[in-house]
Length: 375
Image (cartoon, rainbow, N blue to C red; front, side, top):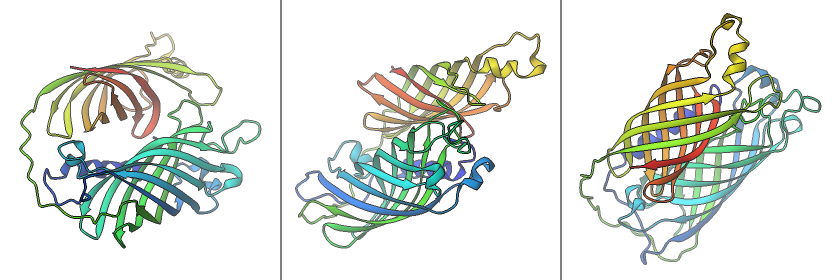
């Protein structure tokens, strides 16, 4: 995440709200024999890199051209998470794009996994919300000797997040035409500076082919029993990460975080609750020392925060969206509000791998990587 990524955050939030609002019954299609089928497609993108910081406004000299190859699987199984989300498609994509100035900013090669959730579905048209995450390789990066003007990204390898609103028009039993609009975001989470990050806004068109001969049909409305197991549970997470601060000097600072939250299950998909954070951020010491007003003070790198916690459960993956407020923090330049976005991957019913990004108003602070326990 980066500063001033308003469009990306808005699309992401709207998508989550729409997913939360999906009814427990709907008119959906599945294939006649109940088998999951492979769907493959290609998309061509046209758009631009969003200029969110004045330091690289002069680097963008043209529009962005990109293409994408997708392969996915149509979920069909009833009485599982597939049914709660109206039978989404899951898959993986290869994405290639220039960045509006290949000579200085280079190209992106990325691979990411995704889930495409149907929001509106009729016999001949489907509107969906596609959420993806993965890794991208950017061919050009900041180098103080060879590419000092590129103040956007300090590393070749970056995390990728992708939000896309899809419109599929069924041309035949197997062939569909897509017209999409979305944002692809690349950032290293401040693991290496500079890290202004890159947001690519595109509109795209493409074709997809379903490898199945059965005629799709629409079952009758099926009303699910009301959710009654609104239990309260607790999450404990211990995580760590590393970050750099400006100016770029390759110095890594380690950050440790400990979180505890109490959440209430709201339905088959979402949980909401409150949590408490403790951060030990070694990078705060040089920042505090750089402020002459802190001379003679007892400098503290520990931080305490309280947050509103929200989990969206998709089978064994929980999407995390938290909003927090610092109760105690000596370093004030980032403000008092922070947020967290990412994933929990549950190996068992209780133990998960935590991968989240802690930010300040969408400006990346550090990546949290650790383990969690739910009870």
